[in-house]
Length: 441
Image (tube, rainbow, N blue to C red; front, side, top):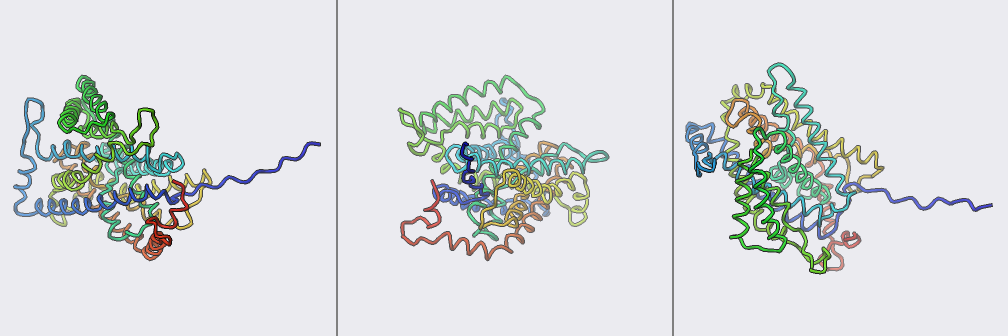
């Protein structure tokens, strides 16, 4: 008789939000510090705009925002507000492109099992608020054009809140929030390119491939000369702008072109960092400290008109859909997608993390500001009544999401602090916390 087959050892179950490598953890921590500073500047800029736009000198704010500069011959005689939305935000999306590529090429998320978590969460965080907004705005005086407004997460704003109430949050969750927001940005720019391009001109779009290809060729050869790269990047931006596709798409494409790792002539990706790290260090401060705050200053200056004006704005079904999408739809989509991933892959949460932590972080992801304001302008037209109502709703929904998330995360503050102290222990004095010395990578 043949011997009975004995069952082999069970495969280890996947851990959701497990601790990543020490190298990736230190890199993410550095990014979080920089984005937190940018978030504080963003909040200051938005607050200044709101105060000015609702002061006796509001007409001066509008005049500054609507001042036109640039050459008319290239269809670039734009207002300062448009330059901020189309030009400065291209820098923001360039950084987003760099970060997304680094995560999936050289970060912990090159492991498909790790990548599945933030991707699924980001997709859920787009679908559910979009559906909720659309349901609210079906029929009557609703307007479904703004369905994508509550789908975006503002990483700088969210991290500014996180720095205040959850600085000791387990690293895996902070990494999850950052990566989710980066994937969210990619989804947002894809939505903008596909659904908010009304007059596509194929000629300029095809011509944009020429400077983009030259830019990619130079950076692949590790050329850093600004006098070569900057004109090519500018030409790509101008041609994408002329094509009718929102010009920020050019920023993402340029970011994707930059190599993440440097390969020797013989091949092999382990030869050290590529230009992505260099460009990220150069341009992230410009994005966080200047580009995004300036955009926020010109985009957030909506005249509320006191309590009655606020009530009128929030009574608009567009505003109701946005607030519900950010405050309820966004966290519901993220939490549901994460739970379904755990349920159908039979994965477990890391022992140090509870579902209440994931809930708090999902609510914090409902802080939508920069990209939400941009989509509102594209959907309804900058300065229109519906756009003004959408801006009020984005501000109100984001603030409410930040407050609710703050309560959740503050309730876990003591546990987070204990975890942070444990993570920081280094018994052998080699500069690497003990817990990471048992983690592969």
